[in-house]
Length: 239
Figure 1 (cartoon, rainbow, N blue to C red):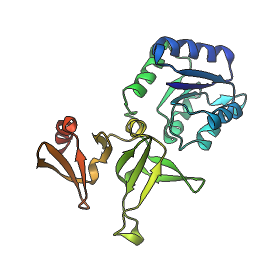
Figure 2 (cartoon, rainbow, N blue to C red):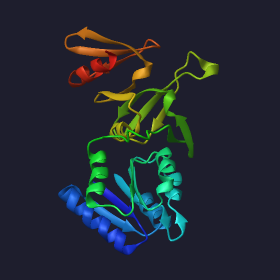
Figure 3 (cartoon, helix red, strand yellow):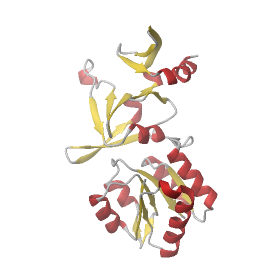
Figure 4 (cartoon, rainbow, N blue to C red):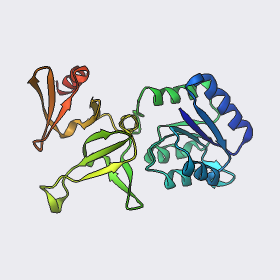
């Protein structure tokens, strides 16, 4: 795992590093501490990370600048901040968790476990997803996503037809992996296959296709595969 701590208070940054080293041990490949927005953006322009720990008040500058600039990035974000009143806003941006200062090592460990175990935030699921399109950020309503298909480190979002093109199913590319999206998307989205996440509200029927194969029939007539190990979980959602 490649970690980035964005924290301007040196003692807090050191404590975060110490706790993360205790929690994650040899899972950590690299751990970098930077004191502010400019340094964070510079690091992210050169290096790929998996998880960021972000303060929201960095030498008087707003940490949301980092989120706004790299909202569509492939990494996950855990906010560590004393600004509890900004927690809901942070979740709207698609952060994985909000750890309020002061915090215990146990609370930080819970946030890290959420990342490791692909668990989303049950009380504040993501409502919009940012993607990069022609060099700009575009926000997509999560409710418009029918299913997500993984391809290497990227994903393809299959969306509801737009009113002017009711017979055309648009797609958009996201830099976030299936694992990352499985942590962020609402409970109505379930991992049905190693390469697919489905919006259960867009599905009509679970089919047994023979030969140990299963599939979900979408309301628009398309089918997506269901993995054998995930069949029981998907079946339970239809009961």
